[in-house]
Length: 303
Image (cartoon, rainbow, N blue to C red; front, side, top):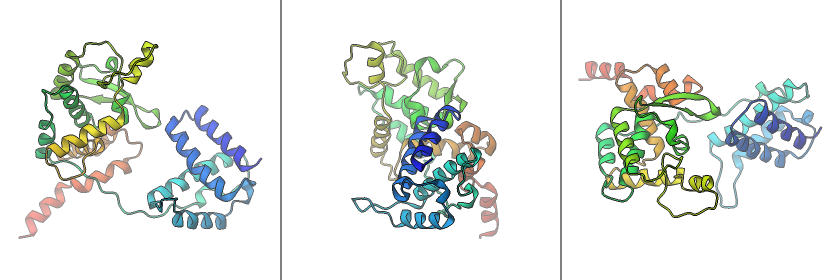
């Protein structure tokens, strides 16, 4: 069987057997499609370490029609997808290169941007509550910081999911893994105030103020669901009004949520669970920001 057919089989396996998210499958399709275009529709038995070496050179020297190159991180994503595919071949006794022979490239240690408490309060206070969508926008900012949700998770939230009395709800994050999310008392108040002024019973928690029309009522509700792009714009504009020089995105509020927990003594395993990280390694990017012992050593010995 040739490479193109096997890639299709792998994508079907990811969808049906592994129940992976549409976004994950889309990424696999993109990255493996680039390898297929470069390598050609050949027998995967011909994939060797030399082929991988030449492919890595191709990725490192790649430029699109606008002269943009691939970052080290993106190059690794291509290799991760290829390893997953080769692992699938191995499990199905289809001869090819052993996936563990593909090593990922080293990338610079990841750093994160987060808001101080003072910056956060300035951001929240920048919202004009007298404006048409003021309560909605304040509730969005409060929820992002209170929960550490990814912006896609927030955009997909429905009203009936959120229990304002218990101040908790469940979301399905990356890999469709469920996790419990908690609301602060302040956030619950802002969400409640926002929902009080809603004069509809539509499903989405956050809606746009547009006038999109549809004959299908359910479809109409979904068309009014606030998009991730709109939420990103709300956060960006609030940061500009607050005079915050840093680049502020919904993910910055997620970082701020995590660092705030760790600064106040939360253990890293709990923070991992609340963020929905599959690996503790991902959560450990925050620890160097919150290492109180290093601060104490600096204050004691650096006079």
